[in-house]
Image (cartoon, rainbow, N blue to C red; front, top):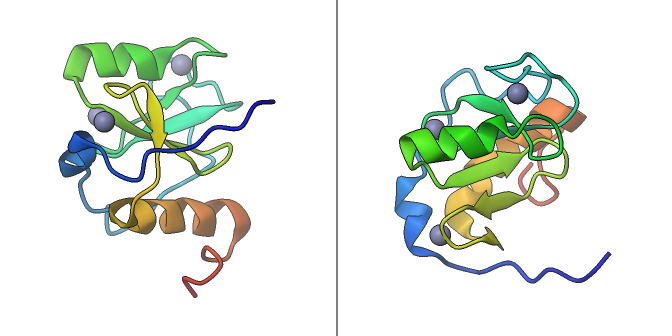
Amino acid sequence: MFAVTPLTWCPHLTEVRPVPSGGLDSQAPCNTCGDLSENWVCLTCYTVECSRFVNEHMLFHRLETEHNMVLSYSDISVWCYACDSYVDNPVLLEAKNAAHLSKFGEPLPGMG
Ligand SMILES: [Zn+2]
Ligand SMILES: [Zn+2]
Ligand SMILES: [Zn+2]
């Protein structure tokens, strides 16, 4: 493991849309291949696709749609494809909180 310092801001934060009213489902399968092991959710259209360690469907989603901001259901971190970096910004808290709530049954620490 190596230390990853997320960006505190990136120009693609404007692509992030509000979380759907039904919240997020951290158990949702990949929209393309149905894999359940390691999925990401797009923060622009909220489609769920698998990671580059499975079948790379989120990468394909990014190439097709140019949606850059994606949230990992594995560790609730947000990746920006365009910046090739993790991003941590208050704009992302709503989605991170919804993912945490789905995965752990409780909100992010400090968000209760
Ligand atoms: Zn997949
Ligand atoms: Zn998308
Ligand atoms: Zn970015």
